[in-house]
Length: 68
Image (tube, rainbow, N blue to C red; front, side, top):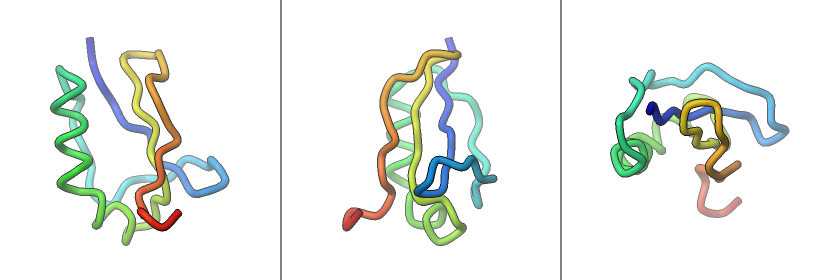
């Protein structure tokens, strides 16, 4: 299983992330990574993220800006 993030503008349009992640082997690893890199991702143009396990959407969109 692979855990991946989709990076989006607030309207749901996919964007290329400012920091390119690998695929993660656990949900915890994916969430730890987003916790570490959310600020440069937000500054790079991503407004929200969606977490997937393989092709299955787990949750999101989750705003990167706490004020959203």
